[in-house]
Each structure stands twice: as C-alpha cells, then as structure tokens.
Image 1 (cartoon, rainbow, N blue to C red):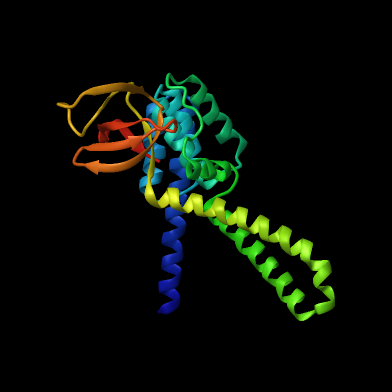
Image 2: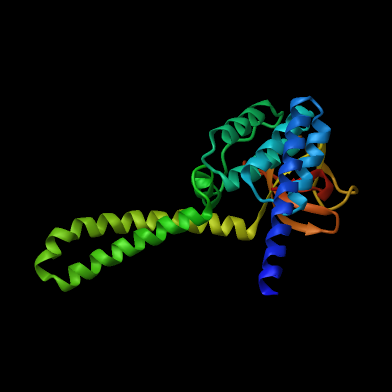
Length: 246
C-alpha cells in the first residue's frame, strides 16, 4: 500500500513537471511568433505556480520589453539578477533599459546603499554569507595556530592581519546587503509618468516627476501612498499602483 502511494505521488509530480514544461514551451513559442502578450501571460502563470527560476524571470523580462513595457521588463530582469547575479545577458539587458529611460539616475548617495550595490551584480546574499563564513573560519584557524605554536607567531602575524582586514571588509559588505534588504524594498516605476507629491495625497504639492523604469526604494506606506527615495537622495510620495516591487 505504501509503495502504491509513493508511486502515485511520483506520477503526480512527474505530471506536474511535464505540464510546467509544456507551458514554458508554449510561452517560448508565443515569444518567437511575436505574440508577446500571450508569452507574458504564460510566463506569469509559471511564476504563480511557484516556479522561482532566473531563466523564467529573464524570459518574462524579454517578453515585457518586446511588448513595450520597460518598467516591468526591468523589474523581472532585476528578479533574475537576484537569482543569477553573474548572468551576462541579464546584466546587459538591465544596462540597456537603464540607458534608454528618461530618468538618468546616478550612483547611490548613501554610504550603506553604495556598499550594498558593490556586490549586488556579483553575488547573492547567500553566496556572500558563505564567503564571509569561510574567511572567518580561515582567520580563526590561523589565530588558533598562532596561539598554540609560539614559534610561528611572527610568521603568522602578517597573514593574520591581512585576513582580518579582508574579513572586516566582507562583514561590511554583507551587513550592508542585509540591512538594505531588511529595511527597504526596491521597486521600479511601471507607469509612463508619475507625479511625485510632497505628502501622501493629491492635495499635497507636486515637487517633480519620475518616469517609467526609474528605480527607487520604499521607506513608508500610508494607505495607497508610499514614501520613496531615489539613488540620488531625492524623496517624495507616489501611489503604490505606480510601482512594482522587485
């Protein structure tokens, strides 16, 4: 009985995977035929079904781009980068959209934000955490040897100092990534033009405009309004429907 139950579960899983593969093939075929709206729908369906794969986000970004939706294309390229930070195609397409958008955004203004950006296109937070852990283990091992072997202390002093500096740098980079991920939410503007208000409502003063594919960080939510900050430090309020979270 147990064996029959196990075989049934395996058959169901196999059927589920086959169905997902069929949807992926249909999405790719729709994209190749130029039916980008249909391709978007099918790739979005895969994500709703729980698929978390960099290739799916990348293909969805391509479909949105071909459909003329640069904002949602950039959102999905960034999601793909979170899973595959070293993928050259993902990074190239992100750079292409950023160069085309109306809002030419500069580097992050804050020190912590600037540190976080340094590794965002190279390592995932988990990979960075493993590197820091290995550095700590190596530094601690060298320290133990220096303590236990008195005649090796002079030889190990310089390597121990160098490892300590590298470990400290790794901790700063990891801490910045974790802090930014925990304290703010990255988002991308998905409307062509959005009025930025001085407060959470249309009765407040309009202070400037931002455009499709502008990248920002969410700091506060009040009803349907969000307070955000741009990389250059400018802040304001826009409607939540104007953006899509990364």
